[in-house]
Image (cartoon, rainbow over all chains, first blue to last red; front, side, top):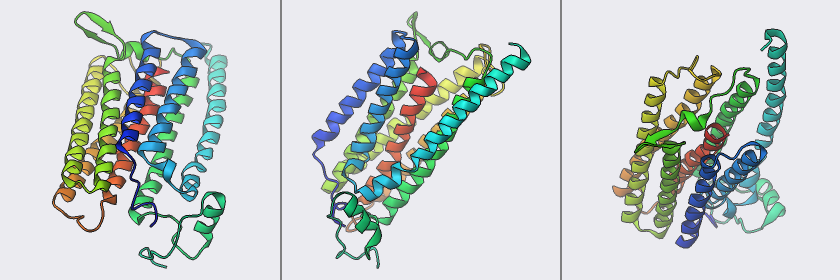
Length: 105
Length: 225
């Protein structure tokens, strides 16, 4: 086991990421606090969400230092979720339209 | 080939290294079996939460009634001030703090500082328990406001079922995590892993960070969107 006995990284790395996560959370809360709306709101929410998720996975969960074998096992299956999201978005849109047509709301 | 074989190397980087990991006569993943099992479990859990959030997206898109404004629904009035999403923001910060203390626990475990490790895990569990407490308070407030899985006073009926299902399942994960962490801390403190290495702390940490990770997505899609 070459690397796993390790996963030893300087404490400073964790403290910096911790601080970053606080800052990103504060930013995403600010999006709601200042009541930003529309595409600006959704874009900012997604940016801060992916930044937070990325840092948690890469640093706190040590994926950045893992081998490619594990990274592919973790991230390749997520493509299926992307397909599901796309399909369900189309389906939701369709249901919405049919409800408007047949229930007249 | 057994897991104890130390002769196998995992030094070759990149795609060539991955091919050799999978093809060579050695264990594929360069980690204890418990850690890869935790990763596989977390991957399956990712799918469960993704399906919940996707179905939430689906019912929200197809609802013809207006969707309740989360910013207003979860607002609190503190000292006569109307603050949107206050409790949710505090819960978010608490969970991130607990993730930080857990990362430190893993770090101290690999440094061999058992005492600090145990205490940091216990602190993480306390933060987790306070998160669950706040969630119980939030559920109580919403239920007294008249939110039910089949309806609510503000609009689309699907709001309640999505809310209780998603936050409930996440809360269940946090609760299970608190128990898991306390159990791990007890075993580490009792010296159960002395001489065996403290990878067990990293494995527990993976689970805890995942719970925080799921909250990042719930916070973005359910509370902020």
